[in-house]
Image 1 (cartoon, rainbow, N blue to C red):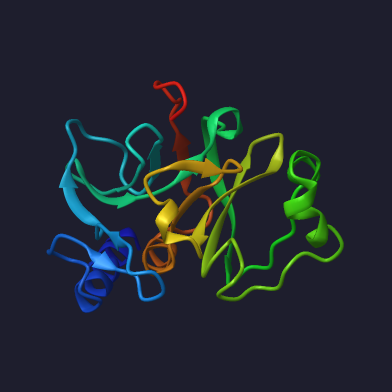
Image 2: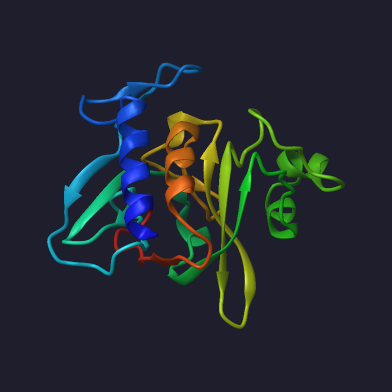
Length: 194
């Protein structure tokens, strides 16, 4: 099953033109986002896991033989980033979104209007085209997500309320490769303010 995910993911990347080239401008903004890269890791990691390195703004979908797909991402700002070990407990296409009570308390002028009912899925939704819902043993849903974004200019920055974000084209590719129960490791931030 995992080999099929690898082959299907590689075929999807090749078909969309993500292999090779320096970058791709998103249709809505013209912002250049580097394409996913097939990379050789400095050491072998367990295949078919997601690893997020916040200081480098990179997410890795690991493969056998110390290979991985590397994606550019955005991460949670300062104290809102949470490191740890998680697993993918749910996956949703064009997910609806409701801000958490903490988000509303921190920024009521921005999020208060969405408190009762949230926002339906679609191109203007902050969760973008796809979302991987991160869970922890004994805790359940952590409200952390790896999701798309309708703000591609935020890639490479620590700006979110804790989630990792990819452009919609790239979260769609990752989403198709990552099954439920996949292990996800969010590494600690080592650089202040990152």
